[in-house]
Every structure is written in C-alpha cells, then in structure tokens.
Length: 311
Ligand code: UDP
Ligand code: MG
Image 1 (tube, protein in one colour):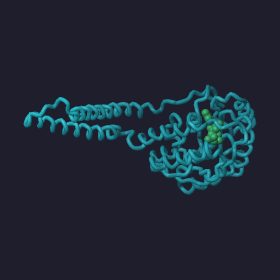
Image 2: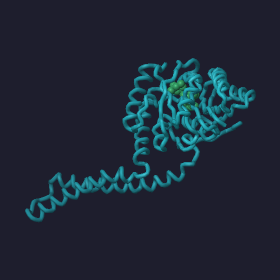
Image 3: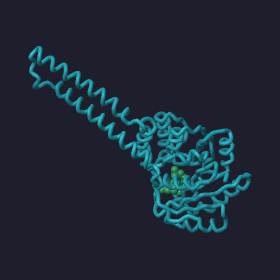
Image 4: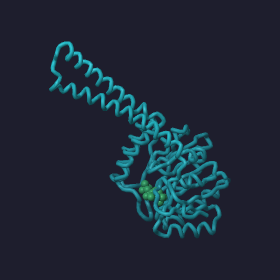
C-alpha cells in the first residue's frame, strides 16, 4: 500500500459524499495504491450510514466507528493505527482542506521530508474567534517548542508511516504533532495550501480551545524537554532553594552563637526554613515524577479509544 488518507468525521453527513468524490478523483490520477480511512467519532447524524454506503461501492474505503465521541485526536490515532500506507495523509472531513493539494504533499515527501504540514495562508475562518487566537498560539508554540511552522492547526498533513506509528497521541495533542514528531526525529517542512469556508455543518470548536492549547503547551514543553528527566526540571530549583535556605539558617545560627542575637521575631528565619522545605519538596516531587514517568513510558501502548465496528 502506498498511500493512506485518514479522515476524522464528527457529524459531517453533508460533506462526506462530496469529499469522497474529490478525494477519489485526486487519488485515481496518481499511480499509487491507496486506501481512504474514515473514522466516525461517535456522530449523531447520518455520517455512519453515508460512510457505509460509500464503503459498499468502493473497497478502497476502510471505515471505523467509535462507540462515542472520543475527540479528533483519538479519531486520528485510530486512523494512524489502521493505516497501511507508506505515506499517511490526514485531513478534515468538512471540505475546508482541498484534496487537490495532496500531490504537492507527496512531492515534498519524495524530496525526503518525514512530515509535511499544510499552511492555510489564506484562511477562511472567523478573524476574531479563530484567526487571531491561532496566530498567537502558533507563535507561542513555535517559541516554546522550537519547531517554528506557521500553522499548527491545519489538519492537512502528510507523514511517512514511521512517524505516525511512533507518535503517542493523548488528549487534544493532535495540534502539536509537528512538535511531537520533532521529538522523535522527523524532518519537517510546510507548504501553503488552499482553504475553503465551511460549507455544511458547523465547527466543533470555540474560543475556549485557545486556552486549552496554552495549557497543553505546558505539557508539550515538559514532554519535549524533561519527560525523560523530570528530576532535572524539579531538582534544579529544589536544590537552589535548599541551598539558599541552608545559607540563611547558617547565617542566623552564627548570629545566635557568636553575637547572642535573639532569633524570635526574625522574618529571615521563616524564609530560611521555608526555602529548605520547598527545596526538599521539589526534589522529592522530581523523584516521584521519575518513577511515574517510567510507568508512563511502559504503558504507552494503552489505547485511548474503543472501536465499535470496522470493515
Ligand atoms: N472532529 C472529530 N471529532 C471531534 C471534533 C471534530 O472527528 O470531536 C473532526 C471534524 O469532523 C472535522 C475535523 O475533526 O473533520 C476538524 O473539525 P472542525 O472542522 O470542526 O475544526 P476547525 O476546522 O473548525 O478547526
Ligand atoms: Mg474545519
């Protein structure tokens, strides 16, 4: 199998037939074997019926249905797990991404990149609610993770199979895939893509997403820099705090013994003791994190979704 196209679907019944037509048109012009994997993420509309009908006509389709709505990340993870292609293309089901861009992605992969990310240069979404928050988020993510691309939020991306097989996606981490891919050593680039306004249905996300993205960013930074060495993260401030605390207490002890100064009523004493306490707590926290992280790395194979059926 050459190419797998992975499409998460949540209540997109009107878009699906059109999307399928356009995808098929593009894929048939390429001389590659391919599969189209649709993951119905617990839709409450007719999406599954539409997909089943398409699947009956065309064996290129692989369709997966979740027992409930597990979220876009889980849907993508399920698609990635089932993908058999050497190259995996992910895209949205709502026709905002354009299947006609796929050949550009394949060309970049052929150039030797492991991950090609779409950049919605001319994005067709609400300016205040979507474009400005996303600008800020992209800038922030680039700064903090060090993986500078313009548009983390664009789902249209191409991956070499090994990349998706080695990503472990949790929560809403699909937005940080380029950073996570960099973590496993993928060579990354981006290309401008077309972007269309949503024709049918409505977006599944609101403004609150921006704040969640910022919280997730803390996790990603931690994963990126310290996930295998949490004691370095907690231990350094812990050590600094303990040392300063000890120095203060030592100074006060000298005052007491050599100059007979009364220590009651000296705020510095409180600070010294506090710093020692905080320091020891930080170091202990680091050690506990070290233990947890080991369990975490060994249990990563745990799936984050439940599949109801699969054809
Ligand atoms: N989606 C999903 N599960 C969810 C939310 C969204 O599978 O819980 C799918 C949705 O059907 C679409 C894609 O993820 O194919 C992106 O969603 P949407 O278009 O609402 O996001 P936006 O383009 O507005 O960022
Ligand atoms: Mg969309």
